[in-house]
Length: 205
Image (tube, rainbow, N blue to C red; front, side):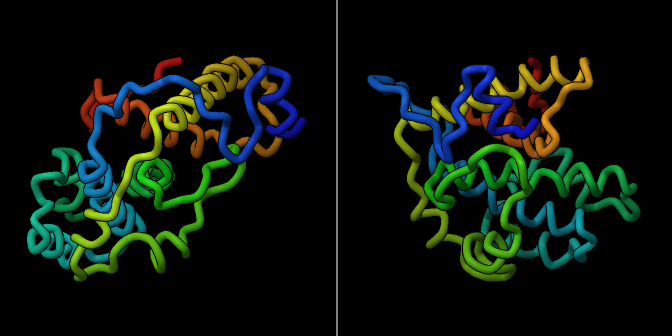
């Protein structure tokens, strides 16, 4: 079974973007600037996870005044000499959370179902400011989507995550569902909800 069929069976939208929740006006707990800065930090962290030299990235963070937005765990990762393969992979996967956050501030058109990884080439070449460049134009242009759209995608991601946990235990996951992508999206939305700091986000079902 494919994910598009699977979500329909569970009453979950398989649209590129689920229908907006009408009359929902609760503002997001995170500001557009805060979200944009988190994506910039994540892009550097992901690069280091892919074995890019951390020194120029750390310098860039300081030059752009975003070092204070780098979390405790991220600072440890950036400054340790020999991170393990597992640590690198964990931070690399956060690119999928970054993609979800970029969608929330209007930098990505849609998320769709979690059946493929994000467009890394577009992310690096077109969306996130290049290493060493001024990040202010990117940060200041961030605009949050309407609350009803954010909630609809948040709800869909949560519903898929809960259903996927049950399917995983039963050995019945859809063939094309990427659990790591779904997890990272859930991670991003849990952080957007504002109840947890980035390093301590939990994705309970």
